[in-house]
Length: 285
Ligand code: PLP
Image 1 (cartoon, rainbow, N blue to C red):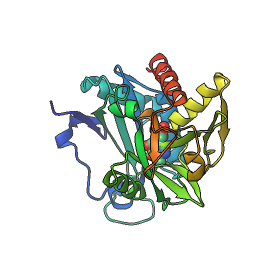
Image 2 (image 1 turned 180 degrees about the vertical axis):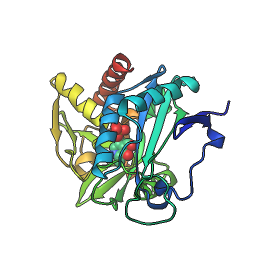
Image 3 (image 1 turned 135 degrees about the vertical axis):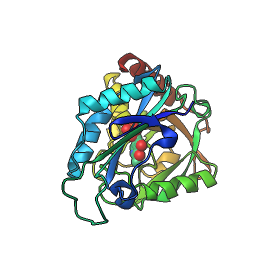
Image 4 (image 1 turned 30 degrees about the vertical axis):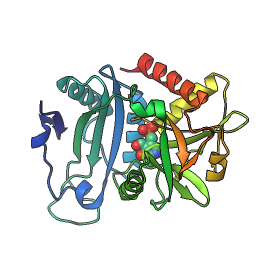
């Protein structure tokens, strides 16, 4: 079956979904995106993703072409039309297509809104059992990483380097500290059982899964510290892991070819993964 996509008000077969070459998302990366997980046909922690969407578009003065409530309805209709049980819904909004290529914001141009789905079994992903390798790369991104912009070239290069090294993610390094993964938040568990992840700020994207995991851990009286950490600290840690909508909680078993602890997913990581999956199932809608 040809999957169904959404483009500016209509549902169309993905192979026929098109936007203009003058679209500012294409010309300038002048757009924002979000990715929400789908479990058993329901959206996971989607209000958090849509709140971040509203914040991101606000930061670049991009008006949403539909209300958040309508966007939610479109997401749900797309899931239904694709009969999607487990996977992801991608959505992107751009400043639309003007008549030419002027940098300044166009006047009277309707923003573009597109969505598509992909199938992914996040709960039973093989890497959840084995963990993943990560490599490190310099963080060469712009200074407003808190905005979920579609300008992802630095992450494309980082994740390509990871793929070439046989790794599942790249951890980006700035001033000797890990900022985050190419498409995930980075965590360690110290030898004295403190869960450490970098505090939110313009240096990282405020991950929705990160936020939920930090809250779920705190509710269970687990110790959490939000501060930067170095690769040396990660290699001396008990455990390391990443979080994202597309992986939930995922163990990191080596960094630049050096094992984290015994090179197997740790018990805290496995526990947080189970806690998150329970939360996701209980709250999906
Ligand atoms: N950090 C970056 C740079 C990302 O691109 C992503 C997800 O795409 C994340 C963190 C994780 O965010 P979330 O948990 O909201 O998926």
